[in-house]
Length: 56
Image (cartoon, rainbow, N blue to C red):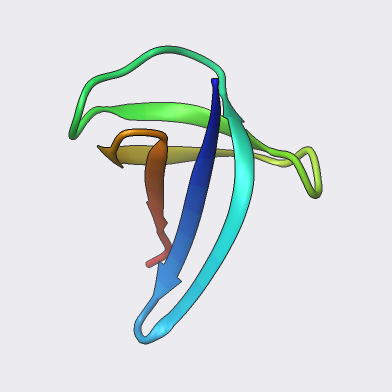
């Protein structure tokens, strides 16, 4: 499923489109492959077709 993925660090937010590698429910973490780079990240689902990656 194609999802909108957001990467956040403080007040900086980056939005990209990615492909969820598995189904998940609100609050769960799933692996997402970014369409722009092919890079895979772990994202937390926070709404329909939306996931967030928090960089620490």
